[in-house]
Length: 639
Image (cartoon, rainbow, N blue to C red):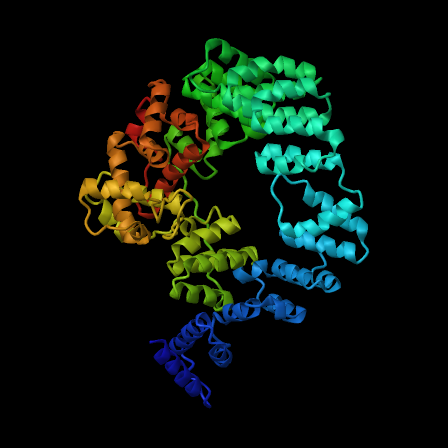
């Protein structure tokens, strides 16, 4: 079979080498495929003869990149520089400068390396080679400064840094204190192998400290022994705090009891002691804290200036239905936190509860000028419609629409290289001016490239361009999939928009796949439960129709399980039904809808629920079915 394929390629070459070429896009695509097949079969003569015939093809830059990088050892600085200048946004080429720096280092062509890369590269391996080149060419102080900066990392560094560190060490610039400082960073990262590696580099006079740090890494419970055996310094206090936070996660009460001793032994300041106390306070936010622990925690938080810790305490008060506590903790928030949408809303609610309705309503009306969940909730609390403001982008110019980058995006999509197309698109949007970014977002919207439309609004932060942010993707499929269910098309689309930003090939680190990010196990269970035909393999979850069918069945199941309540079903879709039942048990019918949402302890799920409810409202707006952000049943229920 290969013999006949190469015979066919040879015939094609003889045809294409004639006076004229068939330069239709289809003909170019055929030659592009032939080149790729020849390349994969190591038929370089075919590649060389066909390449010149595709100079006008949109993906010619990718062929050039492959040709240039298949053996960088033969590439010249002029070739690489010219390619980078001609293709500044080509995604595969973004790593090319660092790769070529490493190649020049392999050649030991140090002056050429520095001429090619006048500034230190971002990639660590290339940066090490850059600073080694500085040392070779006599700029030792620059090299030492670079080595110092690269060395101080808690992560394992690439082997290409060994040469730089070798000359740095030989010059006496790596001191035991440098090594201890990096051990501390490795301790913070939990990088036990690096801690042990660095320990072996310490001279005998520092073995006591090294031994103590290794023991800390292996067993955080030895932190008191560490504090007792080493003299108090800024270094030992910092190491104590790092490991103490790990101990607090393992045994909160043991950690709490240890604080006075650690603070005394290490001569900690009040702020350093408070840092230890805050680490414990974080572990005492659950309902399982005893009365005494809760009182201790609150005394710590009253002295704290940590915004995240104080905001967590406000949420605890909301979840407990503790209105006096809510007032206390809201007042403790720093100004930066108080200006957030959620705390403006709850300050307004507090004023209204105190009989200061006009003051509270001023805040709510001001909040309505923003976008998202809390502005919509503010309108609902005032019992007036939320004003949806849609920014309109200008259509792209012909030059922009016909740019080489867009041609590449289109062609990559033709070849089903959608992830590469998305990378191209992001680089293109990031490289353009604000008006051009708006036009690109509009272009993608009009082309029905839903994921690229959304991606453009994210890259360019076009938050008011609601049409481009919320395209009506696969609308007919969602209408068909929901017509026999309780969930609405807008709600299912809001879930998909939040889950995948309309990327049908999205896959999470844990395996959730496709538009509605369905887990393979969930898909199998749902298919069996509802007798959904035609599903046999998790790869089918990347097919939009299949994903929508299975995803809406699962969403409907949690929606019905939680009494047709989108707050609860959205939380369950993200975090699982059992967690939602736990949270409902914690609030125990004491709070309203908005307080329940804000009291969700997982920040990811809390943001997820807010986004989905707001996105549902936006989709209803575009479907000409406007409604309040929460249904009357959701709003009036106690949680």
